[in-house]
Image (cartoon, rainbow, N blue to C red):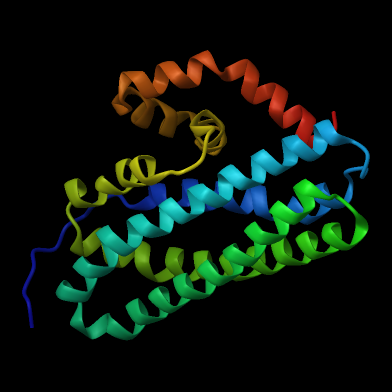
Length: 218
């Protein structure tokens, strides 16, 4: 058995992206259902909104696969069943995310009732699986990682996700994440973000507000 020092790393920030994904994917089916087929501007807004968050989900889970599971597998041999469950969940999520991405592309190109229903079902299925997966991560993995990963190791996750994000609106994801933070979290986290990232967010605040207003039909 590999011995490792016990840490007291603050891993509670995992709640932030989890809250963002729940906040986007939970209402997604209702948002899609509310879009009139002839409202091309809103179809485009909802499509780019969901596509970018789906792509950030990819990057988020790729980060856990690269940064978290290998270390916990090595250091916590008595919790290998839990880690295998988490990795299996990622595989299931990846399949559901693929189905949601395909349905989103079809709906964005032809927002008829059949494609709308397909997308609503796909988003609901993805949200259901993610909600259960996140709950187990929050209950089991957050304390495990706190004890067995250093702050520097845990701190690799946000940068990994940003570097591997394949969407075209990083400012949208940043805005959604920042709006999940408490005032205390913003004070602790934002000063440590790279200045170009913060500058990009500041430059796109109005675009963020306008996009979310179109998504919500305001």
